[in-house]
Length: 467
View: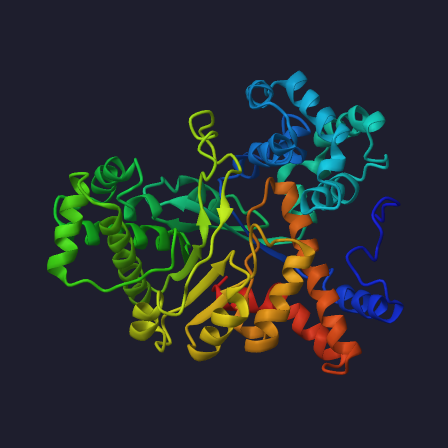
């Protein structure tokens, strides 16, 4: 269905030739399956129970609500009250306020995704305006009860083929066992995320290691037992279909410590006696150990860096979730990654995907590094730069210098199951718009651009991530 509220040429160039070329490239993508990742387990997908109401598929994450409203003068106490009241009346009030104040985020990725979900996914034909906010919500509520809009049907209509779901290293993976036996149209895999187990500055570090000992059956009182326990959990994840490990670290620092010094730091960390510099050294060493384990077990290492989390400390005591108070920071890569790239970067069995929120590093460090090491690929922007303009700058800085196949994209950071299709469409349109420029500059033929676009959207990540 084509909506009158979604222009078929959205995100494409104003120039007619560029626009027509982008549309031809995009048309080569619309029938391809989607590959995506999530940061939470979508329980609705397994049970196929109808979503309770429109808020579960349409309202953005609480962090985004704060992000767009608090900095415009809305009192935090009012936001706290609204976000705590998540019953039917409460979410309807939140939605009305969101539409009333849409000018605060108009034209952003949030706005683009909302319109895609409303008009493309749920086929509502009402303008996204204050007077129609309640009617839009009511129409979506009605559709959610119908078979074509149940969770599994939504994923099937979105052509979602593979879904990697990040899970803490100690997580129970029963969901994935059940999903495997449920004959879903989408293949669900866990992604191994051990962040809390590698960071002595995380308040949950010691309790998480105690749980790690219980889950793995290893003695984590010793450093060697701790390493064995981590390897045990990695194998557990692999047995449930995992192909990736996911690491979110403040910096890209990596270092190989001697067993003696690594043991000493680990014992200090267990006693909560690490200084800030010692905690950073331990994290850097454990990234090296994760790379070594990746070489041995084949899990593809994904490293996200360059974010100062909870920067606005005023939020932290008020909200348990990440409240959108994170900011990107300048990050150095060439020296920081030397330890693991020098040790493993030339090994065929090792794969590392680096995600950065530091745009200045794209052409200066990341593209040259990716061109230097066969193991390293650069991930497309997944957060602060995940906009049409940000994706375009990424292609200009990385792909134009290192080649398209030194980048890889496993789209993530989706607010809901319904948002997966919206994010996939945005990425594909951004790629089509960029490649259209190269066609019109006679750097590529149209057929070459269409093949590259298909590879970037589906064939290449499916091959690279072993999906």
